[in-house]
Image 1: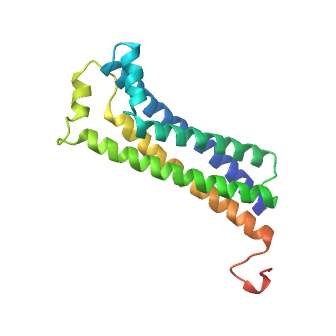
Image 2: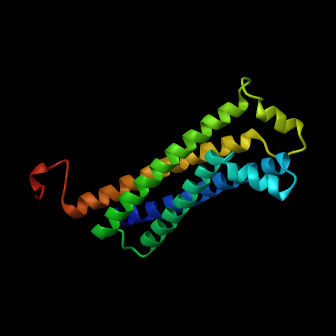
Image 3: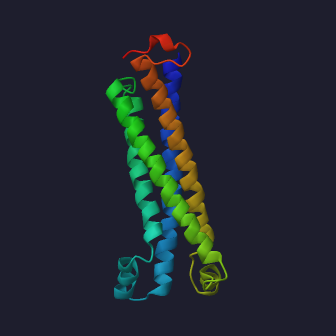
Length: 183
Protein backbone atom coordinates (compact mmCIF):
# COMPACT_ATOMS: atom_id res chain seq x y z
CA UNK A 1 0.00 0.00 0.00
CA UNK A 2 2.78 2.44 0.91
CA UNK A 3 4.59 1.66 -2.33
CA UNK A 4 1.57 2.57 -4.44
CA UNK A 5 1.15 5.83 -2.50
CA UNK A 6 4.79 6.70 -3.18
CA UNK A 7 4.37 5.79 -6.84
CA UNK A 8 1.23 7.92 -7.22
CA UNK A 9 2.88 10.82 -5.41
CA UNK A 10 5.94 10.58 -7.69
CA UNK A 11 3.73 10.65 -10.77
CA UNK A 12 1.71 13.58 -9.42
CA UNK A 13 4.83 15.52 -8.43
CA UNK A 14 6.39 14.95 -11.86
CA UNK A 15 3.29 16.28 -13.63
CA UNK A 16 3.08 19.31 -11.35
CA UNK A 17 6.82 19.94 -11.85
CA UNK A 18 6.31 19.89 -15.61
CA UNK A 19 3.48 22.42 -15.34
CA UNK A 20 5.31 24.81 -12.99
CA UNK A 21 8.52 24.68 -14.99
CA UNK A 22 6.61 25.30 -18.21
CA UNK A 23 4.97 28.37 -16.67
CA UNK A 24 8.37 29.68 -15.53
CA UNK A 25 9.90 29.11 -18.96
CA UNK A 26 6.94 30.74 -20.68
CA UNK A 27 6.95 33.86 -18.53
CA UNK A 28 10.70 34.48 -18.62
CA UNK A 29 11.01 33.52 -22.29
CA UNK A 30 8.21 35.92 -23.23
CA UNK A 31 9.92 38.70 -21.28
CA UNK A 32 13.22 38.07 -23.07
CA UNK A 33 11.55 37.99 -26.48
CA UNK A 34 9.49 41.13 -25.96
CA UNK A 35 12.24 43.17 -24.31
CA UNK A 36 14.76 42.23 -26.98
CA UNK A 37 12.22 43.28 -29.63
CA UNK A 38 11.80 46.61 -27.85
CA UNK A 39 15.47 47.44 -27.43
CA UNK A 40 16.68 46.19 -30.80
CA UNK A 41 14.82 46.47 -34.10
CA UNK A 42 17.32 44.80 -36.38
CA UNK A 43 18.45 41.21 -36.20
CA UNK A 44 22.07 42.20 -35.61
CA UNK A 45 21.33 44.41 -32.61
CA UNK A 46 18.97 41.79 -31.16
CA UNK A 47 21.64 39.14 -31.59
CA UNK A 48 24.16 41.51 -30.02
CA UNK A 49 21.97 41.96 -26.94
CA UNK A 50 21.75 38.21 -26.48
CA UNK A 51 25.43 37.53 -27.26
CA UNK A 52 26.71 40.18 -24.86
CA UNK A 53 24.98 38.38 -22.02
CA UNK A 54 22.44 41.02 -21.16
CA UNK A 55 19.96 38.27 -20.35
CA UNK A 56 22.44 35.94 -18.66
CA UNK A 57 20.46 35.44 -15.45
CA UNK A 58 17.25 35.04 -17.40
CA UNK A 59 18.83 32.41 -19.60
CA UNK A 60 20.28 30.64 -16.56
CA UNK A 61 16.76 30.18 -15.19
CA UNK A 62 15.60 28.95 -18.60
CA UNK A 63 18.48 26.44 -18.71
CA UNK A 64 17.85 25.25 -15.15
CA UNK A 65 14.14 24.84 -15.93
CA UNK A 66 14.94 22.88 -19.09
CA UNK A 67 17.16 20.53 -17.10
CA UNK A 68 14.35 20.27 -14.54
CA UNK A 69 11.85 19.34 -17.26
CA UNK A 70 14.18 16.57 -18.41
CA UNK A 71 14.47 15.29 -14.82
CA UNK A 72 10.70 15.46 -14.31
CA UNK A 73 10.07 13.50 -17.51
CA UNK A 74 12.65 10.92 -16.44
CA UNK A 75 11.02 10.65 -13.02
CA UNK A 76 7.60 10.27 -14.63
CA UNK A 77 8.84 7.48 -16.89
CA UNK A 78 10.51 5.70 -13.97
CA UNK A 79 7.37 5.95 -11.82
CA UNK A 80 5.07 4.81 -14.62
CA UNK A 81 7.38 1.87 -15.38
CA UNK A 82 7.32 1.09 -11.64
CA UNK A 83 11.09 0.72 -11.36
CA UNK A 84 11.59 3.40 -8.69
CA UNK A 85 12.06 0.68 -6.07
CA UNK A 86 15.33 -0.52 -7.58
CA UNK A 87 18.27 0.83 -5.63
CA UNK A 88 20.29 2.16 -8.56
CA UNK A 89 17.29 4.10 -9.92
CA UNK A 90 16.56 5.57 -6.50
CA UNK A 91 20.20 6.67 -6.04
CA UNK A 92 20.29 8.24 -9.50
CA UNK A 93 17.02 10.07 -8.98
CA UNK A 94 18.09 11.39 -5.56
CA UNK A 95 21.19 12.83 -7.21
CA UNK A 96 19.35 14.29 -10.20
CA UNK A 97 16.55 15.82 -8.13
CA UNK A 98 18.92 17.32 -5.56
CA UNK A 99 20.98 18.81 -8.39
CA UNK A 100 17.86 20.27 -10.04
CA UNK A 101 16.66 21.73 -6.74
CA UNK A 102 20.04 23.40 -6.25
CA UNK A 103 20.07 24.73 -9.82
CA UNK A 104 16.58 26.16 -9.44
CA UNK A 105 17.46 27.73 -6.09
CA UNK A 106 20.48 29.53 -7.50
CA UNK A 107 18.87 30.57 -10.79
CA UNK A 108 15.61 31.79 -9.22
CA UNK A 109 17.57 33.71 -6.58
CA UNK A 110 19.71 35.41 -9.20
CA UNK A 111 16.66 36.30 -11.26
CA UNK A 112 14.92 37.66 -8.14
CA UNK A 113 17.91 39.93 -7.58
CA UNK A 114 17.77 41.05 -11.22
CA UNK A 115 14.04 41.76 -10.96
CA UNK A 116 14.61 43.82 -7.84
CA UNK A 117 17.35 45.75 -9.63
CA UNK A 118 15.01 46.41 -12.57
CA UNK A 119 12.40 47.82 -10.20
CA UNK A 120 14.79 49.96 -8.16
CA UNK A 121 15.04 53.70 -8.64
CA UNK A 122 18.85 53.73 -8.45
CA UNK A 123 19.08 52.21 -11.92
CA UNK A 124 17.09 53.56 -14.87
CA UNK A 125 13.97 51.82 -13.51
CA UNK A 126 13.60 49.48 -16.44
CA UNK A 127 10.13 48.38 -15.37
CA UNK A 128 8.66 51.85 -15.82
CA UNK A 129 10.54 52.29 -19.09
CA UNK A 130 9.04 49.04 -20.40
CA UNK A 131 5.55 50.25 -19.48
CA UNK A 132 6.13 53.55 -21.30
CA UNK A 133 7.55 51.86 -24.39
CA UNK A 134 5.37 50.01 -26.83
CA UNK A 135 6.46 46.69 -25.39
CA UNK A 136 4.49 43.80 -23.96
CA UNK A 137 7.36 42.92 -21.62
CA UNK A 138 6.56 43.61 -17.97
CA UNK A 139 8.52 42.96 -14.80
CA UNK A 140 5.70 40.86 -13.33
CA UNK A 141 6.59 38.24 -15.95
CA UNK A 142 9.98 37.86 -14.29
CA UNK A 143 8.29 37.69 -10.90
CA UNK A 144 6.09 34.87 -12.19
CA UNK A 145 9.21 33.06 -13.40
CA UNK A 146 10.89 33.49 -10.01
CA UNK A 147 7.85 32.30 -8.05
CA UNK A 148 7.37 29.21 -10.19
CA UNK A 149 11.12 28.56 -10.08
CA UNK A 150 10.98 28.45 -6.29
CA UNK A 151 7.80 26.33 -6.33
CA UNK A 152 9.50 23.88 -8.68
CA UNK A 153 12.51 23.78 -6.37
CA UNK A 154 10.24 22.81 -3.46
CA UNK A 155 8.65 20.09 -5.59
CA UNK A 156 12.07 18.70 -6.49
CA UNK A 157 12.97 18.64 -2.79
CA UNK A 158 9.77 16.68 -2.11
CA UNK A 159 10.71 14.24 -4.88
CA UNK A 160 14.18 13.89 -3.38
CA UNK A 161 12.70 13.08 0.03
CA UNK A 162 10.45 10.40 -1.45
CA UNK A 163 13.36 8.80 -3.32
CA UNK A 164 15.49 8.94 -0.16
CA UNK A 165 12.74 7.13 1.77
CA UNK A 166 12.60 4.48 -0.97
CA UNK A 167 16.37 4.16 -0.85
CA UNK A 168 16.46 3.90 2.95
CA UNK A 169 13.87 1.14 2.90
CA UNK A 170 15.75 -0.77 0.22
CA UNK A 171 19.11 -0.49 1.92
CA UNK A 172 17.65 -1.33 5.32
CA UNK A 173 18.37 1.86 7.20
CA UNK A 174 15.81 2.85 9.76
CA UNK A 175 15.85 5.73 12.20
CA UNK A 176 13.44 3.92 14.50
CA UNK A 177 15.53 0.80 14.97
CA UNK A 178 19.21 1.57 14.39
CA UNK A 179 20.22 -2.03 15.21
CA UNK A 180 19.23 -3.04 11.65
CA UNK A 181 21.89 -0.88 9.99
CA UNK A 182 23.98 -2.97 7.63
CA UNK A 183 27.64 -2.18 7.25
